Length: 361
Image (cartoon, rainbow, N blue to C red):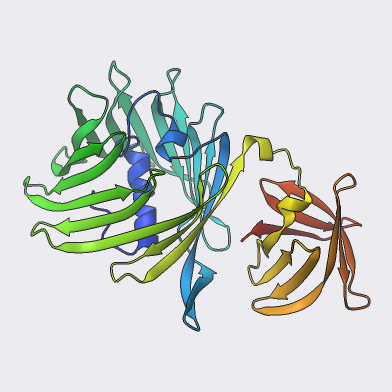
């Protein structure tokens, strides 16, 4: 991760690099104040305990852009502790198998102390150690490999405030390979200027945000001030004003990807599900081609890809935790016991032999 200029590629590639930069340079993009926890840094409101994020390719069908297959990257989960600090970040492939797992730890003052990175087999492959000054400001991050050999060092510079004015990247020999300067708009970064190993201007990255403080534009320019990348983003929000879906547009103004978020709030982690929450489209977690749609009028459709395979009426018994699908086709009706775990709908046969997980689409 020797490049600070991270916004040059398409969004789904950029998204992976963005988090790698975040986990190594935590709180550089935002406030760096002890009053701001990880939920603040991710601009998450409410008592959030976990977030699942999935990236889908954009497919143009008959002139309309729709979500296609899940990408093999850009799928992750984030877990937060009771104080709102990030404790675990997991990257998944399109089949929900772990690619990489990062475990973050803090000291008694809620300052970052260490992050351990594990591969898909659970073997530790690298480690990050964080150093704070007497004002609890992050001033240094050291990156070690699996053999505890120092690979890189990030030094963060401040003036009088808690916001970093810039920093530098040093390789394992202590040589500065790149550096950067920051400009702020309140608690959020609006411009980062990147320099090469000789201290010459390499690139600039600009951020613009909406009234909800979510990034709506990312622009990168080169040393000649020519635009090399222009990413625009639009959002859909839940009732907590957290985004649950975003549409990403590339430099040419075409839709590049759709990103969805499943946000787990502390109050919704209890496993309760009512009729209102059931309404909508649910995709099988292990096979996104199969889906169930529960409608407000009490009807349902069960389909595969774009084909409706079954339809009828649905009934839910919240006390017994059973869901009945009364098919219009004789002999196709089914009754399930259900559970609701981390906003996943889990349907099991009454005998308990078959179990299928569904995620809201």
